[in-house]
Image 1 (tube, helix red, strand yellow):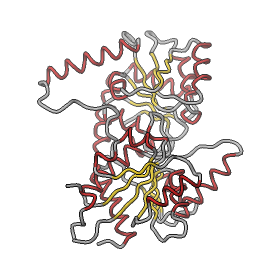
Image 2 (tube, one colour):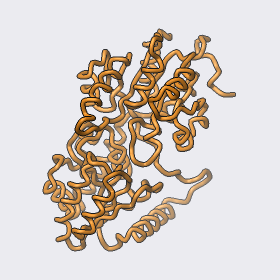
Image 3 (spheres, helix red, strand yellow):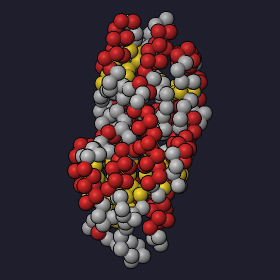
Image 4 (cartoon, helix red, strand yellow):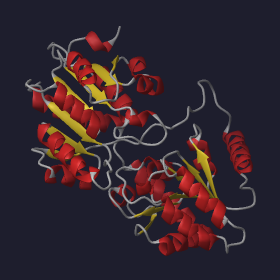
Length: 392
């Protein structure tokens, strides 16, 4: 029997929640809300007797299958037009509480709830970006969302500070668990013994490196949409220095975006050892095959790449921006954003110092173990829901 229609443990009617998700997170390049987070949250809430409706574009349901964990999916396009807002308003008609993920999803939710006394929780998973004339508009949207929310949950301290600066009545640091792997794990049934598993992992790693053209040379991995704030222009600047190494490392960048053509022109014109791999559905395998992970962004909250790298025991070089320092602690090499010399030297030091790499692997495993569990994440959110709805 599904949990979605069951009463609470105390015999009270089940809490009815609506999760509002934008469409950008369904792909491999980011977005303003966390699809994997919403899937994990929905599963945990349903298991605790909460009724969950997920309002999200059809592509998000195809990517995450919210229905498989007992949530009801209502297709709502990722638009702010009247039809989209009307569909969301209808889906929220009997909700006790609405929880929106990301700026644009939160704006739609606020519009849909206009005139109704329904608590709105907003989680800011990342920061929206706008240049030029659009930057003031972005600040207006952030202020509107922050002030409309009963509680804003930020996934990093600086996002909490940003929400408060935009006028949030109540802004708190969100507990966020490590995201599930981007690719399916082994199927059910008894697995191979330790030696066999190690041999199989080595073979898979060798094959991945061969497919990428990285046999006999170091492999560096970067993952994220090809947008300006990701700092790939700085990564290409740093790659010039690695041309003098023997052997020359190969840098593989996974992701798509508007800067692809400009980056490819630089790579070709300057003869850089960088490959733009586009969207991939085997990021976990690529990362496990890498010698180092590189994160050159101008800002990140809880970077999925950083989490995956530490969890997979892959040494990480990252910029000391946003939520990265509090996320990784001393388990990564941190460099200033925009400093290509510092980035290139940090990579070179790690490639030349296997002992330090091993220390970072151990520190990374310990740091990953300190991150919130899925249970802790769900418990925090549910406590906020109870607080706002007066549930006991």
